[in-house]
Length: 297
Image (cartoon, rainbow, N blue to C red; front, side, top):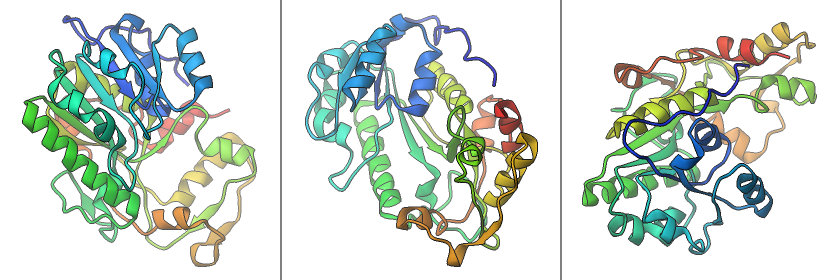
């Protein structure tokens, strides 16, 4: 796996980034920026807050149930805002508790980034979709994402601030990949005829964020790889190059799955990424093959 690049500024103008929900994807982006460009990050965990502080960041606790102490003050100095918090039944927690500040009391704000999901497209029977496709969310979490996207678009229009909505496909990378499942004996080759999924390496999420944030792009973009593929093919490829035994095939209809896991298979589509490429982005890992080759044990 290539090392995380040496931190470098987003651009010539001074930047202060605040991140709501500094989890797996957002953390990768943050680690590629100089510490003095980060005005704050939020986490639900006190232990993670200590870890962020030990790395020179300013952490804030925010669990989505109430405003986070000190967050509004940090937002006042923020130029770039990244939101990586999932909505719930009551809507987007960031907007619910800090929307008034974001909407009217951030004089330096130049760009908003929102990490969404390709789940907003729902089921298209395996057809290709791009950012202009009709949204057909199937699951409750996908419907909530559609509503959250609309709320962020409305806020951005009202205050005249560029907003990038990044629709992410299945995320993988260090510590979160098929090799980890094979090593733990949890990998399964679930087979559902004609089912495909797109994927995206976390390094390409960080790369796309850098491009969009540096340019203060106002766009909705799919951040996804070039090759939607059956999930069993990905497991088989990882087993072969990693030297693992090939798990047996399991018929989807008879598989023992949680309701959430089964719901992912109810949304079948092939997601295009031409819009992101048209902005000049070049993928580190265009398909799962390059990504897994870089991650193999």
